[in-house]
Length: 102
Length: 396
Figure 1 (cartoon, rainbow over the protein chains, first blue to last red):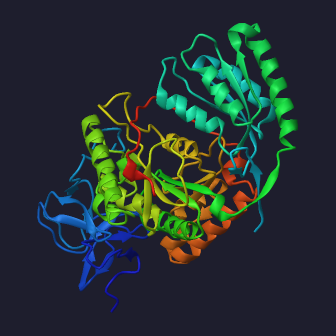
Figure 2: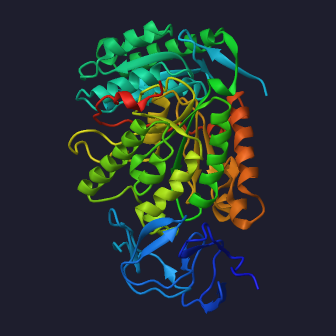
Figure 3: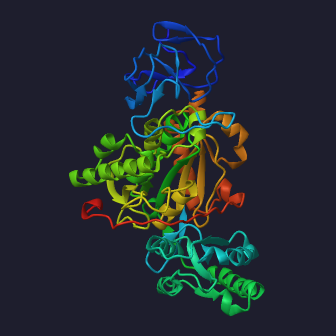
């Protein structure tokens, strides 16, 4: 069994997230390590899925270095983004589809 | 690959031979644009919009008007602005280039100024045919890199592939510049470990700390909404992706906009102003960064984009590297290199890095990039303030 789904890229062995190579629909099964996870929501190219479970305050590792901290509990296979992690430097500004600020 | 550069009096060699039409205040912009329309390929418009004096803008315009890709310069002044046109004309004249200053208030108005300006451009274009040529090596080149419209793919495809090309260029003796210290926040430790000297390591770290302070005071990181749509969650994640453009070579020095690197190697450009926060955001859009690297002598810029930027530049060609296959499909007419194949698994970083290297050579030899073919000549210059770099910043 490959330990990573071909639709994902692991940039560094120590990373707690994997990068999505192509859009994956909600409900699809994705293999991450020993786990096979059913995605709760669709993810698009360039987004991240958790490789490890994390607690609030844990560093999120990508490229082998911290890219911010978890703000909620994160399970393996969860989409990791603005809703469950934050910068350790300056807050992230993002518009939603409706023009509101996330 | 045979590169024949345009030999300038200061010994530098250009890969293009443009006539610059420079407005010295926004009030002269229309006249400058109309003049340059005479020859859309050879005449490029640059300028500074402000009426208040700014030493940074003066230095930038002096460097840009004496850039190795520039063969002749027409300055277009309204007449009452604060820009020191006399000094700028003197600097250009001292560089051996044909130069003329057109003062609209002394020329009889818009129509007369356009006619006079077009006569200068027509004459300059003819004269430029006689510019001496000289063989050019990779070691003569100054190459900048930026990323814009970044997403979660930029940092794993286009940026590291550009890093591979940068490693080859540095090994061949070229001068390579990477920048935007505001987009290196979070990378200060690993970057400092690549400094050529311990003193430079301190300077590199300080430049990023300055950027973090500056952006914290402004309340926003160098992070646009599209970055988050593309999967980037934080400035430090974006930074790590951007940092990959620098490759793996030792870092030889730290420069500020308009500083000309003294010899080949890899340089970080500190683009965040010194002193208290003033004049707003450091670089309000990608072209501001391209302009600053040109002011430090960049012959061309490698621009990695994930969301899909279409810009080019006045003066120096821009090579556009598409970071993902979806955007390459949508915007292929604007993209020179498809690094999206790294994402789809049909090419590796070495292959795309080698393609970028080859294209750098072809563009230096005169091959137009996509943005040049499409007529892109974006340019922007705004207010900033810098202190000179410290003695530890440049290689001995």
